[in-house]
Image 1 (cartoon, helix red, strand yellow):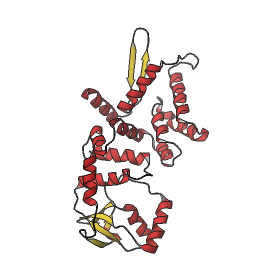
Image 2 (cartoon, rainbow, N blue to C red; image 1 turned 60 degrees about the vertical axis):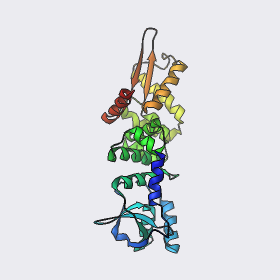
Image 3 (spheres, helix red, strand yellow; image 1 turned 90 degrees about the vertical axis):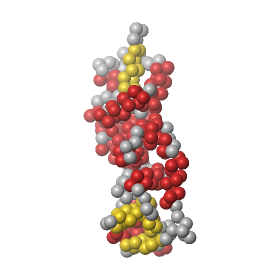
Image 4 (cartoon, rainbow, N blue to C red; image 1 turned 30 degrees about the vertical axis):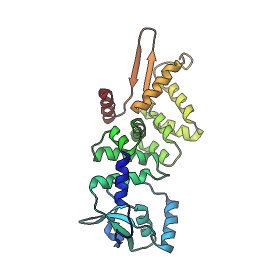
Length: 278
């Protein structure tokens, strides 16, 4: 819940009159083992390095003492920049935190960044679920987000590495990534992703292109396909938002069918869990 986040942030916030700031050798520090962030902007890191070279670390990092030294709780960029600046030590505040608090604080810190990448966000949620044994709804409640939002972000983790790289490089948006997952022949993902980049394809255009590819895979021609009623399109969208996966609704005069897509055993279990809860 949001209150939980505030409590955790308050626990690591410091006041110079109460918290002791110490100088710790960089050699005794290690990155937070629960840190979901993999990418650090080189230009921003270079700017911070120059600042630390001239003025030092103006805001101490927060660490937790361990048998082997210290784990960084908050401030890995400052730690990395200090290394690049040739510093031997860094100012730090030592806090007593549990593994669960370490994990949540690392994720909260990352989620509050404006330049957080979609896949870093997805990895953050997945890490919380795995390490803290949480369900998507639990994560949503703790972070003050909707369950459907969490589910949609997590879907990006089902993309192949090459497509993930394009998203990290900002050549594809997260919306492109989620739309690509609607492609029935998964071996075409890389090819279609490259087409998006080459042609500057919008998400809407990609949706239409994937519909065309999927229809042809079923032995239909573009000419023979009838447009889907608006109310079915609307309901498909609502179900996609609710379950965080591709939904197809088809209807004839006598019957209809709702198809729910899953790309892994974990995703299948997640969807079944949601369906059975209702």
